[in-house]
Amino acid sequence: MSDTDNDSEVAADGTGIVAPDDETPTWRERKERTEGLSRLTYEYFERARREDQDLRIESDYVERDVLAFPTWPHEMVRNLALTSFFVGMILFLASALPPHIGAPANSTQTPAVILPDWYLYWSFGLLKLGPLNPELSLLGGTKLVSDRAYGVVANIIVVGFISIVPFLNKGAARRPVEQPFWAALGAGGVVFAATISTLAVKNLVPMDTHLLFDLAFLLPIVTACLSYAVLKSMREGYMFELNRRYYRLRPPK
Amino acid sequence: MPLDEDKYPMESGRRRFVKGVVGSAALAGVGTGSAMAIGATTNSSGVGGGTTQAMAIENVDGPAPRGMPIIPLTIENGELKGVWPEVTESKEDGQTVKVAETDMGGVTYSTQWFQYCGVQTYPGTQPENDQDNFFRVGSNPAYDWMSDLSAGDKLTVDMFDDYEEWGNGIGQSGLGKPATGRWRSEDVDQTMPIQVIRSPRIEEQAQDDEFLSAATEQGFLAWLNKCTHFCCVPGFKQLEGSASFDAEDKVYCQCHQSVYNPFSAVQTPFVALPRPGE
Image (cartoon, rainbow over all chains, first blue to last red; front, side, top):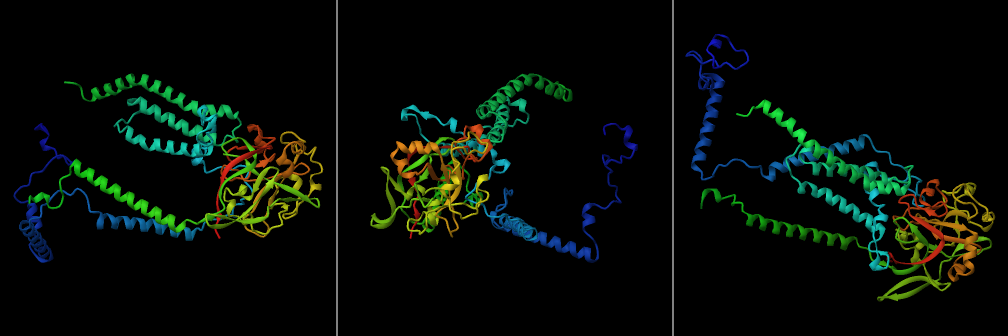
């Protein structure tokens, strides 16, 4: 609004500020209603505000910016309300739509195809790592850990690794090209999740089981290397594009 | 007192460290205390567990830790019957424990062989449980040839007359004729699954093996059919898919692809789980 030419036009988009003339009531005057209920209300609130103000001045309590609300009662009341709501929903759904309960499992027979839910295949696959369990020549060719325990420990290691990843890299990168190493690690992890799940159902996959086992561990590594190479080589061109766009937006002085 | 120290002490590294130590110690204390309380209130004292040397069909592949224990058998009037030793009482640590064990071809056959995978809590595994010990047809026989038998029928020798040529299209025919069944599980809730096989190979092996000659008869071999890995029920020649794990002529568990060779009896030491106390 630097140009004087445009002053005569009325800006309908809210950018033009119309200065109050003498007739226009000020905000204070608008608040101070002069009669009836509105006047009473105004006086009541003004008085309450004033009393609060006096108390604040008298007290030695130091006002601070509020950093957080106390756990009790503020947070707890909210949490309890939310919890009660969801518990209530579960109870309601359970009573309105009672689940079908099948016949008890027959412990003397195992179904021909026995698998956990699909999203647990990776964990099921980790129980089948027997061939990776080293036979120690020091112990006369016996295994230090039984294959059964080895599979369970593998679960702990994988879950443990996944849970420390956020602590290993807290970078602000939002694009894979910005951090090719971590992006490649992630790509390998995703492929490993898929291959280890396939290993879990190896008895149903029409494929040589030894080849499947080897692929389950080699494919993630290959994927990680490939994506690292691709991202690394893409990075220069990508950053060029990004910088070009940035400088077009804000040309350097 | 400075005004801003009334409620919020200054945050400092030292203070955070102390908070961490105190907090983690309190958490650890609560955790240990509740674990001990739960342990003390739920721990049931068991009896009759411990190290035992079982004769088992060998575990040759897969994650199972050891083979499945063999059930020594005899034939009575053409009916197959598992051996259940006489029950004696022995003192262990000032406690009287019922023990069922006997000498079987140079090996001490103990009913502790079957105390794993929860079977140790089944009524049939309790030494004093009075059962007739015959092998019987279970509720869901796994083989086509058993389809006209009904649950509870005793397994008899004449059912296995064609054992030298029997086959069901899985693997090689003539290795032996298998049957599934149950043992010491009449009128109880929990069934001990067993598998029996009559095989010319067993007949041959029994000629020069002291244990097998005592524990098998006329080529019959029986074992407790509970996979030692995670307690599934495997099968001999029951699934087509066993061929991809070289198990079409062996006992194959479809859960984690454990494979057992029924024609190889080996001694396997393991720690038997205790039975529930009296």
